[in-house]
Image (cartoon, rainbow, N blue to C red; front, top):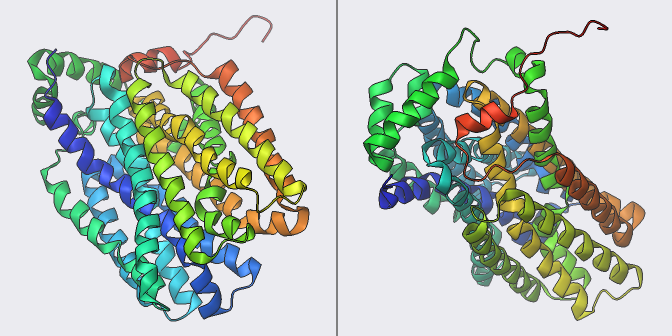
Length: 453
């Protein structure tokens, strides 16, 4: 099989621009918090609400994106998300009241939720099995690049002065428009095309990716996977017993990725650094180091994910984050908030996430669900992810106020240890296996009731 790597990489990178916008949108808020507090006189509770408001849109967007992608196609729905990103960027930048600001942030959240479901799913559906981990990881790389881009953009736009926060949001218009126009060169997902009885179009896409032999084999596998009388993508079908294990696994991984506490670092990094008595300029500069670590370790993960597998990377990431949180909690408990060690471990924590849970969870979620339920199942898993993210972001400042920072970070350490144990026991390795073969491995076949039952 000779893969047309340039073509595959091109359509992957274009689709992964949705990931870049995802990362930019969820992180741009971090640099604007001091301005928003001053302009709108935010209390701690209001600050938690404003920061997490976009996540309401993420939850709604993720809930419907998979089903909409099944009905209208992955590409069309991604085009809509690109428009929502642009509208949200402009609206957030010109908002003059909290309700208006929150409304536009929720709109951007709809786009993030949609992109978080459809971008990795599309990339998995066009990629050969032996390259799928690396290709889907590109989406995670663009997410962390988007996070870093937001950090650097915030840092440089800070020089504008009191209206800097408006330009920080408006800057997202540029990648939004790039995403919109670039999507026109991307073909529709071959698996969606087969599901819509457009087999010849699917064959042409697969052939362009990796040649005639690959196209014929994949087409036969996809058709076999979609055969049968079951209705595709309904919630009733999704909750059948034979899908219970993979649905549990997908939802658990999605929730764990968020409750590992990583977005506390991403969203509140400048706040945490401010507690270490750094100025706004210095705090924003420190967040650029977090972004750099994120990019470097995501690239390292991409290089090995199809060699050593998804499971080992997850275990390394979960264990490393648990240790970091234990140390951060200890330093807060002893009052060493100005210690260089605290800043070091806050910067190291995203490195473990980027090497482990960051790319691997999205890869596994895009792999484990069968063709018939992939859209609906990805929506359920990603919906769970964004609900978990919303609760985490909303509760962090409240937890710190009620229980102090040390106990809050120790809680995240315990969650990471629990996640480590569940992954160790239940997660199978998925590297190098076709989506249709994974379906045969993971879907529990119907069993006859025992005589005792």
